[in-house]
Image 1 (cartoon, one colour):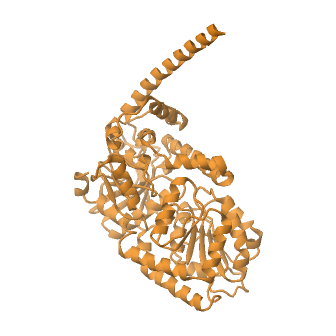
Image 2 (cartoon, rainbow, N blue to C red; image 1 turned 120 degrees about the horizontal axis):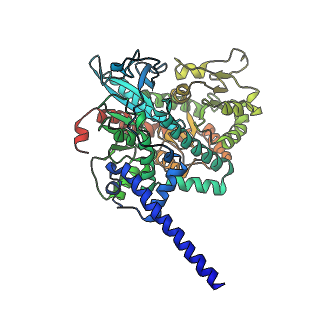
Amino acid sequence: MLPFLALSAVVLAVILGYASVYVREEYGRLASIIASLDIDGFTGEGPPSLSRQAQVVLTDLVTGASAFEVTNITRDLEWMPSASMEGLRVTKAYKSESSSEGEKGFFNKNKLMSKVNGKKAIIVGTIRMGFGHHRIAYAACSWALATKKYEVYFHDLLAVDAPEANLIGDSHKMYRKSSKMATELGGPFEWIHGFMTRNGDSTSLRSTALIAARLTPLLRGLPKNAPVIASHSLVAISATLSGVTDKVVNLVIDNHPQWFVVAPTAVNLVQGPRNYLGFIAKTGRVDGNLRLAGHWIPQELVTSAEADANLREARLMAKAKNATAHPLRLLVPIGGAGAQRKFITGFLKNLADDVKRGEVALIINAGDHDKNIHFVKTVDDLRTFADNLLLDIDGLSPAEVLKKKHKNDKKAPFTVPRVTVCAFDDYFAAVSATDILARGVDLMAAKPSELAFYPVPKLMIRRVGDHEAYSANRANELGEGTAEVRNFMEAVSHVRIFTKHPEPLIFMNAALKRNALMGVYDGAKNAVAIATTPAHFSSS
């Protein structure tokens, strides 16, 4: 027995020895790819231990990044006018059946230029992972276009038809599966997903950077030296590694400081003091690499925040005098990952009687998910009296959407339809519908994603990932949102309180008016100003 144990120990020692040699060699190779980022110096944590090195090597394999070589290839790009935002140029992969040698990649196409008709180019880069990153990117676009000084290119890496985009798509699928398991099954699945989404250490930043290094071909076709505003750290890091520009602004997501959401060589802008102080505590220093900017909100929502709040207050005060005078306008946007099906279905079913009594007017944005549209329609108590099915809201104002009656609706006595379901084939419409509708509702029930920062009273429902808990806290601390509500019956209870006692919502509107005056929602506006001012980069 003893000889066998001794032999086993020797074999195990040999295996571990070879494994450690492999990990060190492979990590050394991977580290050389991202050496220019100086992640050790940026985080202040120094070189990783052998176990952390093994984690980086394993993650590179699991994510599929290891299958991609780091190359100097350039995926040629062209642009087309946005069908949804006037003046916006949307990039896509360029495919030419023929081109001359001297104009390789630029034959009969709309070439991306650093300067057009006297206007300098500005790039807003994003990744279509759920709706959040697109929502942030569109907010930046809205402010850049509002200046009328720049040619704005909207660059979604997933929209480029190239092999590298598959790496992003595969990672997104893994995240969506994890999100749905966490929300539908709960228990250990929710704990694991929560742990993964709130513990993004320096090791996760190295893994993120290694994925970003493989994505550089998707950015090299952009105009040279044009500033890049990134709504995802993958875009910000990839833009730097591609060499296309040294003017990169990274819009840091969420309200929880984690290393993988920042970019070492970019100007990292954060939305609130918790993130700002959290990152300073991590590094032990204050420099131009990190700045407090405000929330990433579209231009129209910010400039109309006070007027919209005044209209809400007027409706709510009228409701306080006569409880049945106005139904509570409740917007329920369904996230891009569609991970809250169980919660939303239970929430809507139990609000059905409140809707029938005229106390609540439901506006549901089912986004671009066929399954979302299906589960909304199959909630029996709602299906029988849905007033509106909007498939296209292009050109409609919030008031027009909310007052529009279904042609077969002859009995509804309310000033707004009892139930409005918005469903879209177009991704932009699915995202922007919430931006349009938020201006005309009294309350929005949403998970604490980027919508937690929007200038509208918010019922913060169950999070998807523990990192989102801190965004709900931010809305609550600002006085414009509830604390996170973990089960749908508690959410229903909140809605019923608001229908009978609108005072808390009046308080929320007063708070968001104060916040607007203080510039809390000016993050995207400030990002554009920083990205287009060279002095901001010389000190970073």
